[in-house]
Length: 551
Image (tube, rainbow, N blue to C red; front, side, top):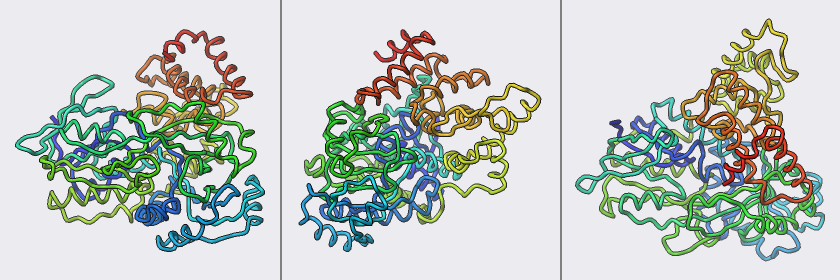
């Protein structure tokens, strides 16, 4: 039996942020997550770091929180944020009467907005529709949700926090009206883990209603499903928003080398309802056309979906539900030591974690103040370490790799250096082998073997998908068609086993990637998909294995 003071349930941004805050204040804590890193909502959104402008008219409190947290995250999470700015654009299909109340809302929330002419906007973003009416510059930015969760975990672990992935909570134990522990099952081994604790924090996002019910409590959580489209190239350098009341398909977000269009809003009764559909994709394209007239001609990389954990105590749903968050102490419901955090947005995750940690610390009589807004998630890499890495990794991807790896940069470099020494006298170096023994496995995202090997050796890594979420392996143009085979073969060669057999690991990875392609299979996309399928189903004789995975 393990013992700790606080158990946090849910390993998304809010849960990991809470683990970090508790650990920095000296409170012993363990986090339990049923999936891998950023398993739920924190990895299934458009990557927008909100300025708050989207909410200034109907949800001013959320707008104020967004702009404050936007500026904080730019400071503490530099490796996770790309500062792009954004445009709010009035098209001929939007109501011009909405502009004035929107501007007043921005001013009241403290959000700096500057109007520019359509001609100026078109010089900066030439792919925009030529008939746009008005354009306003706003402090929107982009954030990598996978990396944000990972870096919060790294920070928490530096202060003694412990995170267990693939551990699903099965029971919240109670004694005399108070929480006394939890039981979780290791989904990889089937073994049960008993943890004694004084407080349980329910930060399970769209699953938080189910966690509350496990403790005999009720929570007004409505999972709200949103579908998004990933385009193959970055046709805008800024976040582009429609200037109208929040609606479907009104935001384009540049993200690395791609652009994401989102999102829809549809209530669902399943927090894991994450399969996009063809009608949703075609509808998003139609809605996006007033901003980018050529949007139907852009190559689509994939579609994906996620669920928002909307807190709906008044019965509101969808766009009418507030994006604000609530901390609920369930002592008032008869269960002492149970605290839930509901609602909110990824942009405000740190504030949400601070508020729920404040509540826990008051209960525990801990007076250490919160420091999460001041201390960086990850320290800037040592220039000397980067200079060593430049000899073994592609230089133009060096900063990307350092941002991805965070605390694991030195460890990865050591793996590459050992491999370089071992292969010094061999002549079988690949054309993309940097420094010897460190071939480039994924050209789309510039991921080398040493990085894959470092992540694969982490005890919480069980699959190629786990590696993907930390390295972006397979998230580029080929969607894993080539790098999946290279990665599995390299791991086998280096004696690093995954949870499943090599062929099974590859099939599972490809099926997860191809799930996002099925709703967009037309034209050239369909032809490319058939080519990819033939590579694995025909040449490698994996047709039966892939069919089994598909079913």
